[in-house]
Image (cartoon, rainbow, N blue to C red; front, side, top):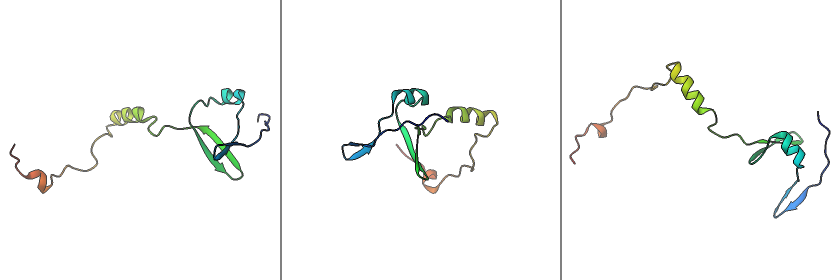
Length: 86
């Protein structure tokens, strides 16, 4: 585990925050958005995950495994069976 760095909590507008030294940010790879999580008496800061990260690869794998079909059979509703005139 790396050596701890002590800093103070500072007022930022109506909130409070801490300054994270540049060296720690560079080593962590964190650049933009973060997620902060409370774990007991510790705050954990990590790079924010993108909600749809990895979906492209998952879809490719589903297609390769022939697992990309509809789960339910298509059933037309009464509204869809009406003959439409344009």
